[in-house]
Image 1 (cartoon, one colour):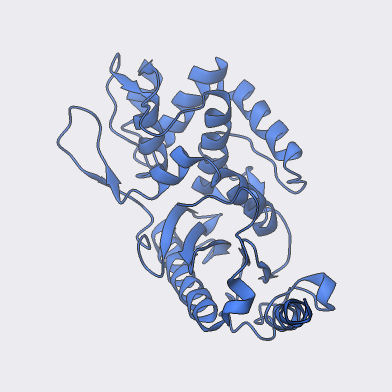
Image 2: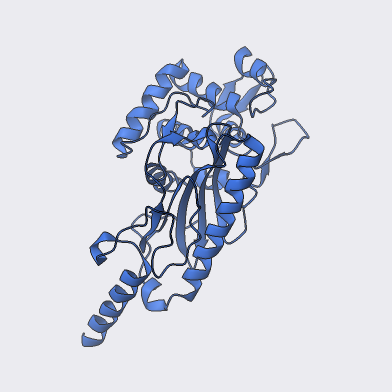
Length: 312
């Protein structure tokens, strides 16, 4: 009994030194500096947040003001769709008709789209892949119309879900993230990442390095080129001129699920530069978290993961 108590005290002391939980007398960084004891390379611009399930928050950085999040929006779109139309692993779901709008939007040169044909029938699971892997804006809006008859009605569902999850600084105005008026914070998006990653179908989709349209030989690569580096298993990129580069990421290290969000990198430059900036920042952050977790004593990590945490 005494030995178990001493181990618990040791774990608590290590936890307070290595994380940013307010109960340990420290506060998460809001200046971009690394949390004492956890040498993370917080981006010098924008905002970010990182947590480890079963361990806690490793801190935040940047001003917590709502900013455009671009295609990271599609995580909420997928989350709402899967809550309303649950899929089991191995289940591709119902056939969905591609309408003229989605087909015509395939050729929108200023957006990230997936090549669809009118009257084509594609199952729900494959449409989720086309939305989340190559980041098809037209697919996101198609799914919104399929679910709710209009994108506007679906956006109401997105915002209601955000309120339910406690995402008080978040406002969705579209299903794809193409609108600069869709804004959120790193802390809010971390709440969504936590919930979305509980769904096994969502986890499987965002871990794919590529996908394809059924019957088409073309391979569509994942916009998240960090997959399989430093334990990365997802989640979603997003970029735009005003939004800059944005990344919601998940990795698994020593059996623990790591979740991170980085927003507003190289904003007001161009989408290509912004995406490169956020992927660079994401690789540095995920690598640093991996190094930190690998160095932690077993007493800090030998307990069970957080309740209901996915075992990807």
